[in-house]
Length: 280
Image (tube, rainbow, N blue to C red):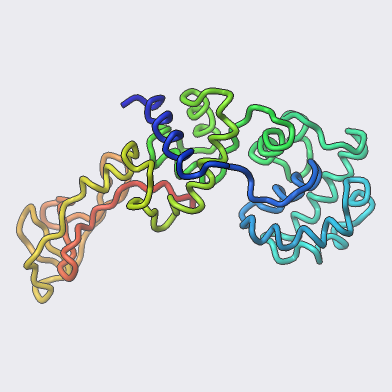
């Protein structure tokens, strides 16, 4: 299956699961969305939505926030991640918006990334959501889901993921795909324990396919003889070594024969793992 075909199958499946994909950040205008996205870095949308009502009541626009100092903003955002830095970014961005953009949030990515605290992802979210620009921002959810499903290959950075996704997804679908992949990663393709059994996209997912090819649990192993059992050389052992597989993933391996065909004796489950592309 080509990556374009896989992308088509995936997006069609996700559309059935998520009929109205959109940001979960609460906002009423471009400035509020910009502030919310800055605050959402390494923080949940739920937490951001809890702090922004009081913040926007005091600072409803860039002009009012530009008059504040970071220490004035800090009490409103102290419960989000990195509140000191984000307070400085919000005030700095507001002042630049007033000074360089006539008090209005710029509507394109090159100008948005000039603002303090605004990287490529944040700029693309704002440009896409409120200015209807074709953009495909990549956060940790999009990074994980795109790599897991197989929409990208050897894409080790958000920028690499973005570039590869843009080659397999039509431009007029970029923004929709961004929201679909984020929401899929947030509620179904979870970082630690993806819900593959309830996933409509699993038939075309490389990660799911690799899970299905893992060895079945072995029955009749005796934990008294050792914590692990190597099915290749037939030995029990209490310790293993590590060895990289063809994906570059460290796997448990038998100390005697170096085989990765190893099982836990208590559960009978294989020690083999498949790449899950979680961002640490």
